[in-house]
Structure formats: C-alpha cells, structure tokens
Length: 352
Image (cartoon, rainbow, N blue to C red; front, side, top):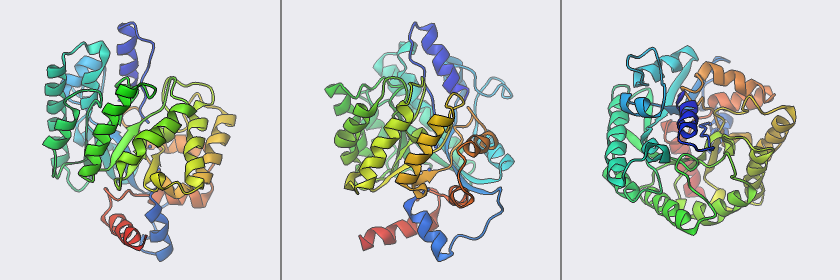
C-alpha cells in the first residue's frame, strides 16, 4: 500500500534491517478455456482479474504507515480498490486483509492483542468485500507464527466474504531453517487445506534462497493437499538479493518440469514483477523460468496500493512477453475468482 514501504520504514525505526514487499499468475484451466473458446474475446486492454490487492483499516495504517492520503484519516477501502480496477479495465479484484501486520515485531504487541487486532482487521476486510460482492473477493490473513492463527482460520470457516488466506513469511519473520517455524507454518497450511481454502503465500525477499525454496516445497507444500496455492510476486520480494528471485523461481520450475505432484496446484502472481531494481539480465532469467513453468500458471496482480493496476500493466510490459503470452495473462482468472474457471478445474480434477 504504501504498506510495503511503510513496513520497511516501521522496521527501520525499530532498528531492524529487514524490509517487506508484497508482490502477483493464470490457472492451468485457463488454457483449456481459451482452447475451447469459452472465454470471449476481450478488448486488448481488458483484464479479467487482479489477483493481488490489499485493503487497510485506519488503525493498521496508523500503526504501520501511510495508506491512501486521499482518505482522511488514511486507509484503503473496498471502494478504492474498485475505483483502481475500473481505471485499468479490470473486472474483479482479490483483496487481502492486512491482519498479519499486527504480528510485526516492531509493533511490540502481546499475543492476545495480535489476535484481537487481526480479528478486527479481518472483520474490516469482510465488511468491505460485502459492499462489492460482484467485484471483490476477500482473503483473511494471519501471522502463521502466532498461536491464534489456526483458531482465526476456523472462525472464518464457511465465510462468503473471506474465501482464502494470505500469509506473508517475510513480514511474520518466518525462518524456513527453523523447525519450530516450519511446524507452525505447516499447521496453518494444513488447516487451510482442510477447509479447501486457496492460499496465497509471500515467500521471497531477503535471505530466502534456493535451499529455503526446496525446504518449502518438501516440507510445507505437501500439506496444502488439493488447495490451490499462489506464490506471491513469483517468489520475489524485498530486500532484493542478487539473483535470488530468478533462482527461487527456477527451483519451482525444476519441480514442475519433472511433474512433481506437490506442485500440481501451484500458481504464481506477477504483482510488482519485475521490480524496478531488476535489470535486463534478471528479467531474462525470470522469463526463462516462467516459460519453463508455463505462462498458464501465472496470474495478473498489481500489489495495490503499492502500485495501481494501471502501473502494474507497465511493469509486466518490461517482461517482453509475446502477444499470445500477454493475452493469456489478460484472460487469466483463478478458480476462486471466476466460476467458469472453477468448473473447468473440477472437470480436470475428475479426469486425473
């Protein structure tokens, strides 16, 4: 939201050096829809869905940093997200709760306070989504290291407004090399899978490297079961480390290329991809891995309000994708957003 930059400022004020970054892919079913002609031809500027947006209440914005100064006091409401979608001719938006931010170490909140404020933030997001049921799809969020995380998922079981969960490993300080952290994260992922919730996870940035990606795939991903799992920012994040982004994506590409069954329902979003700091060599490496994975697994996302959807389109243009690949991205729509994609996915699953 500026929340990404605000998170970084919040950590710097607290003496931390870790900055946080939020970044968005098409479903496997998308290709089938296109081939079958069930997706109508669209205006070249039209996008079916933005799969990575954020809302923020006045409270979380006051604690973590600026949101939209056009709101007084600053906040990010559902109406702001819909207006941004309209400006870019995007049909629907997936909006994430900022509840996970209450677990930031820099806020120094006790676990009970983290649980209470995260619930309020999830309540806020659900209420905003309810105002625009035809345009917005909501995801709750939790800090997976908090003891309250699983209970929060269970509280929202069956919700019509919050139909998935967003996790941010960097913001939550998850260390993939810590057995205790992996155990906590795995428990949250298993609970989401038990409810068949789609899961969006920001894994990248900072010291997260290829060994961490392997550990994630080996120890966390199997717990997702038949839930869809979307890797935010195609595995990237801040602070950027040389080549980490493309190398992390390459790890996923290697598993997908050999048909590793745990990657069957893994998607990637292209929000804030490529990052402004990533030059031509990194972009070329990213595109190489995207094509190995298959463009049909990538979803359009903006990381609103870090970027607007309009700005996100210009970021994607830096990837130099072919016209056909760009068309796939424009038409991409995850099963939890578009009913036709969901139905196609169910038919595909029955045929497996």
